[in-house]
Amino acid sequence: MAKKKTKAAVSTPDQFSALANKIAKSLDADLLLYNAPIERHLDQHVIELCCSRRRRSNVALFLVTSGGDADAAYRIATCLQNKYKRFLLFVPGYCKSAGTLIALGAHQIIISDQGENGPLDVQLQRKDELVGSESGLTSTTALKTLNEQAYLAFEYFLLKITQGAGASISTKTITDIAVKMTCGTFSHIYQQIDPIHVAEAERALQVAKAYGYRLVGRSRNLISDPNDALEHLISHYPSHGFIIDQGEAKKIFKNVRDFSPDEAMLIKHLGPLGRWPVAREDDHRVLFISTEIPARARQKARLIKGGPKHVRPKKSGSTNKSRTGAGDAAAATGTGPSVVAQIPSVQGIPRRHA
Image 1 (cartoon, rainbow, N blue to C red):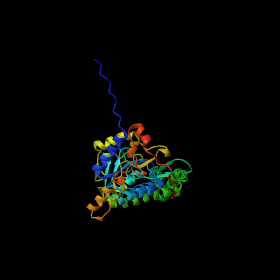
Image 2: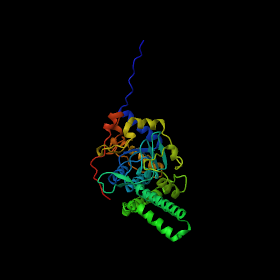
Image 3: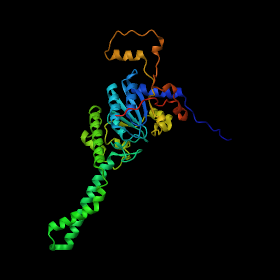
Image 4: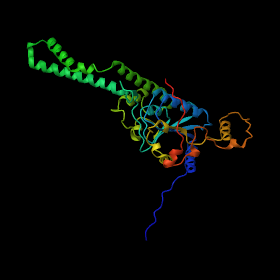
């Protein structure tokens, strides 16, 4: 007797909302989804979202990004540090560059099996290119490598000439010849290096390091000395795309854990949106996916913390209902492709140029 094929269960928007709110309740945290480049006009959007809602004690940021602007990353991280008691960073997928800078401000980092951070690097516009970017480490690493090769070439020429000439030529003459041969070999390569571009790259890396130092001063989530850890994140790894997974992150940060079953299921519902950065600007998502706590719950929390004891409840019955506000999509989200279509993208936010 042939077995009947069973259809895979399809979650509804209400189920997704219930799961998001279940996680929010267990963590006592607002759930914020950010899948977009880290840019200056979006940092303001995050600040406005946080300031315009009744907040829980903590915040859980689900961050998927290819990186971006260090200034924007710092503003996002400090906003979450200022507005919440604890800042939890969830890394469900690709989270690089400036995303790692935001990670330095988190009190705890939760990384899935597919999650990956990267070195603390910055992206600079390519020289003489209208489109495209390159790692800030590219110029400084190239110059360092070139200096090392030039020194090795000088040493090679010096020894070879000494061995061949013997005592017939003075050391000064041998040195002068080795210098001229080294300069002749490498001068045309050095001429292609733009010192201003190298200085810009070095300065950008120092800015990221300075921001990181300020963020870890509050999160205190680094195992080693902050200066050593930041230098490690900037220069230890051989490439911009180097993967810092959960195991590697545990060597750097104190508080690192895996996703719980509910947290993993939430990301599974989001599909690629919870794993890979979106490509088009129209697809950027920056929003709370948990519902806002009711007004009475907020008042109760204030009373517990020793806030004002005489707060008149509003007469309107709607005040007891959780509302999502402009940035929430918990009541309008589902799973799979249909879910992504129902999560509103970031639109109509004017770009600002620093």
